[in-house]
Image: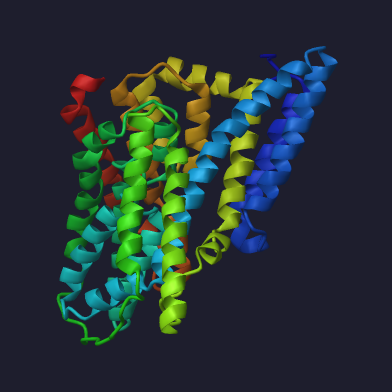
Length: 432
């Protein structure tokens, strides 16, 4: 590739990326969806790359670079499309409402609820994304903690940390781990070696915050909610879809996205059967339109991934990621670089950071790839704005869970971050 880091096209592309990301950070202020500036930036950056390569007489090479990025995004897009569709369908079948009603109706104390919501967030996020997990558990905390703002604030912090930590030890738990798995850097089973470090990442701050939770019992809530017909079938098919994706990747050596698309076929057939039965029995609750659930996919998120992946990929073609790789992974060493990138993920979204690392493709051991999965997945917990889970809960629990309320306990979260890294280096020392 051409080194365009000091070329006018490279410098202009870098400026465009920085300006676009400033708009992403200011999304709440500008009310501009985050996908819009990065999509514009991605197009402009690649246009400048095309111009620079054409001026150098190497225009045909740009096509190969672009196709490579399209392939990477296409696999991620199809995988997430199916996963989000299943989550939307579970929501439509009222599975999450039933879970919330059961938790609220247990009549537990604030401290018991603090631990239960944290534990559930940790394990659920290993299967669902951290955003969905945080919203489900956050709804429980808000439902029972209306009389205790302190419980709501601490409960939300715990949920954010637990959701991010739980996603770090599963290939399906976070976009970053999914990217590492799809890139072939780690096998499906290798991620589970992060279970204890990820658990410590949440357990350490949770144990510290435990003593600040009110030692009281909220008023009991009784809410009767039932799932719609076919909910159990959707849960089973979701599990089967995940298994199919794993088998496609590990046994057939095919992209896991193809297995996920096969799983979408499972859901389409199941929805057809429910529609026929619903029409026959004249039961509106039984009818399931799977295409409606596809339409409900959060396109802002998927298009944001498009913009970020193409923009960062463009910076890689220009030569900036090679510079960053030389400074971080050669100058500082893999361990220091991975820890720093994890801390940066509290400020910069972890998706572009992880894609940048994968594009740099530094020569690292399996232990170091697990390290970046851990740090990039959990570093966002240091600040409330560092992950989608934190941002979503700030909107859901307006006034009770804020940037400043999270910041007061960032030191405890940082201790968990350090403990997780230390545990990984000890437990998985043979992998380094």
